[in-house]
Image (cartoon, rainbow, N blue to C red; front, side, top):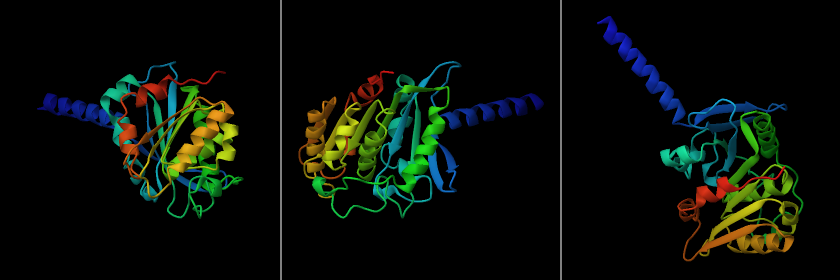
Length: 258
């Protein structure tokens, strides 16, 4: 009986370890100014001692704001948990949650998503100030490959993706804004970041012109940029984007020259 109990205990411990590896951990970061940022963290599967791993910063859309530390994984969360992806592309995946009364890149929701009417000079938002503090802690981790830092965002997170690439081009090797927008005049600052942009041409929430003009501005600045537009697709262009057969391959191939 004792042997059976020990066997069951070992099995339970093994199951708990595997479960922890297969899920995003819930975490909370308190900034130096006392602000709270809830986030989820997925660590590389079977991390090897002495090995460095990429880090992906994943920014959700406005509909997933909150304080539950769960909704930010509504769109795209399972993509990172896919066992094939985890095996082929081991990485740290950092998924913060924007508070319900905040907006990633801006101090308030922009009054218009028309590219030319988006802020041309935006101060660093409080939530991004806290996120940058957290990101800096990961960048100081010896297990993180600082030449392979990526940012991905959809809708409001797409706007945040542009903003971070503009503010910190020295950090990010690649950026994937999906159905986002930005004032194109800002993008010359991000010319050293590799971009892959996705948008649906029937988007009635964030105009497709945001991505079209961003693509043209980045090309003019000399950036390496690709753009894919989905005919007839409304705001949920993250669905076909995440299902692009080379989505992961393209992302994890990008590397920052140091």
